[in-house]
Image (cartoon, rainbow, N blue to C red; front, side, top):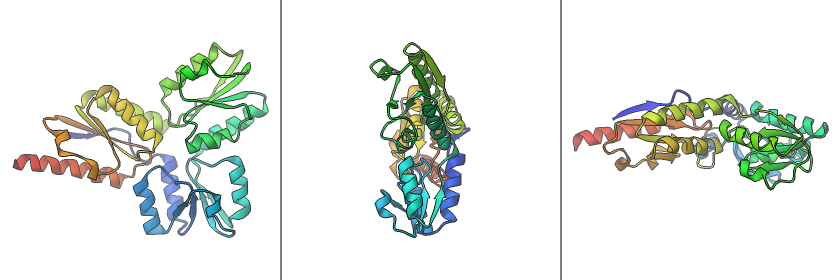
Length: 281
């Protein structure tokens, strides 16, 4: 069996930046999870003493704090700046962009519509910069029953599908008098999705590696499943099963934007070990 890595996968610019900031600020406390990858968070805690606090209640006056890659709510940011002695902002620049757009278009009188998961920390943060009548939709179908004003500004969670974003925009055109569309899906997300789609079309098994609470990783798995029925989402090589690879010719590997190289390499070696065992049977 041949093993092939997607042309674009793994750590994106924003995550690399956040990891570097965490490693350079030993002992700091992150508000929430720095990135959506449990094992990388554990590594930062073990090697650099960087731990997570679920809320601002975990921050004491004088602490050094890090704002996660997904950002935090506007009000929480102001409160954090008043409490912590030092605040390191690891918010991904691609996430800062929709925050600024939500704030500026709201001031201009537009109602903000966010395409995304309303429970996701990135979306919660962006929503806090918008006017009170801002709404979050998970798909184009939710536009039909939404209470919309005449003037709407549409933005997207950075890790969403560009095709699905287009469907939401098309649905809004028929419901509004004026629509401004801002493509806030990050380039790395698009590149990873296209590379996964391309590889899944030729592979007969796909392994997608990343946090199971990661939006962009789950999106990659969904794309892989569209073209390759035997597609699996794993967080580590320990979750791999030898029987998945029986009689397979090409195993494709992709990974979420929060998945470090060492986890990808670990899984790739585990797949190679299955091949060695098969040769001994």
